[in-house]
Image (cartoon, rainbow, N blue to C red):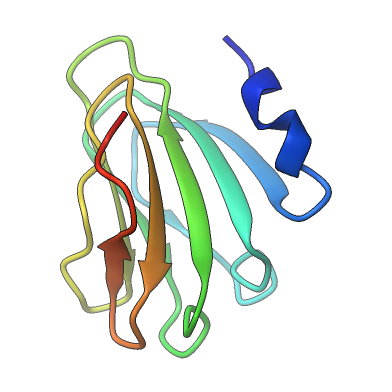
Length: 105
């Protein structure tokens, strides 16, 4: 399916594409930009931002799973927000953890 519908914002957002069956813990550098995460999980996974790197961050998460696997973006040690399979959501960090800007679409 690709990420073609995000191309209009790709100059403002970095694009991170990955297939994973385990939690993804970002490095401080990977967490530094406003990012579009285009992830295909093969199990329910968390997308973990190191503490102190997400303040004011805005992210777009697209769950490319063809099954029922969710992605939960969160700050390390927090609960995060689950994005359902085949859905996309915009999230922002409130200083502690991520919260929804949009519902899953």
